[in-house]
Image 1 (cartoon, rainbow, N blue to C red):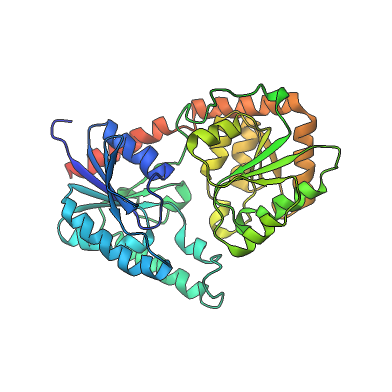
Image 2 (cartoon, one colour; image 1 turned 180 degrees about the vertical axis):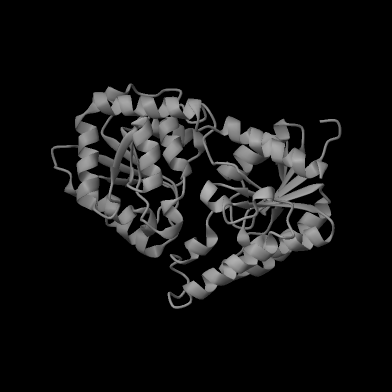
Length: 371
């Protein structure tokens, strides 16, 4: 790169070291020679891996995040005076529009199918969800006319935006990132079943807990939950769960790698909500990259991926008995399960990895900056 272009990523809702934003996208851009800054809710300004982190105050509640935090981010973004801005939250669409009106190049990174996601948000009155969903889609459709590009995490999301300014950048794993240094040989591992990620009702926590309770007592199964809990009813469900359920909280990437290197199977049991059915959750491919077989929701898209590779079992995510049967089969068939894990790992190394997605991101940036 002859002249070092400055790019700014900004988010009001994601943590500072978010896997997609910081670890994958910002690091990729910095390694390619861009001058990269990240504006995010954080406790201090600092430079990490060559990326300048510009902090704004963490909001006390959702309302403050939608108003004060958004304005703080806009002010910080103007101060940076970048060649290109790349944002990650729908609530920041007005900021993207204002930057565009000032002649700045802007990219909208769409992580979720927002209009469909809103239909399942517990904090929105069910009677208002349809109206809010329509409004959100309208805002996105208007906003995209001001933006120079859209980065979509799945092909289904990309279909909602103009083809000529949209690229799909999947959230696939970084090769080798979750390979444990001291992985235990598969057949010698304890009967640990893991779930890594946000722990919510709609992602199947209730069914996972019930399933563990249905597995015969002579099978010493242990369900390990690694992630954050924000919903009060989920906190209660986990606190009162079977003794074989172990909640260990948020884990660093190194801790996740160690956990996966000692587990027998990874769970991805999202409910069949509109924004889940065509999603391609990062955790599915992370389990595969670590050589774990998976037990996943039987959605058409997920069936195509998992059946084609032969890397796991599909179940009705709303049926704890079916989930329990699948877990029991994995634990009682270690050799076949290990082979499933190996096939998944090979597929990640061949197809489902960040290397190829990074190339797409860099090409898209090059295209936009050249105008």
